[in-house]
Image 1 (spheres, helix red, strand yellow):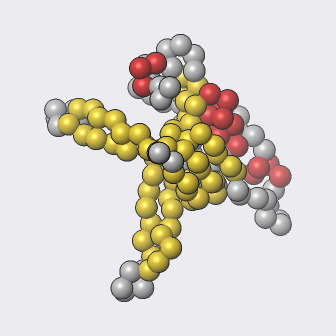
Image 2 (spheres, one colour):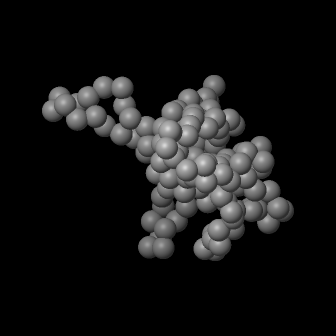
Image 3 (spheres, one colour):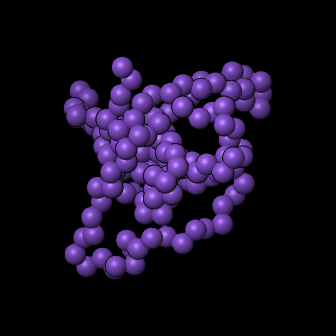
Length: 135
């Protein structure tokens, strides 16, 4: 069984891309605080890369932003690549099957802060092939 449950805050705005066959994919990072403190009293934080597909990807790009609190249900997926120096790198991502938006509007915040974002112009992202799809 490969199942992960995480609650954390986005470390960057979501980035929406599209595969060659038109399937939407959204990527973002979250920070998750550990439940315990170290011996010096500081609390450690873990950082995870999240990948979301299809309609859920579009919703994440539209409604989430850096700092948003989310609950993620998904699975771990490893992938390897060669960096520009020819070194083999392995990355572990969380492929989300469910994303629940946990941030709520605080009193005094502007309604515009929680309105859907208008699509921004994005820098060119590396293409995703259908072979990378987890299904």
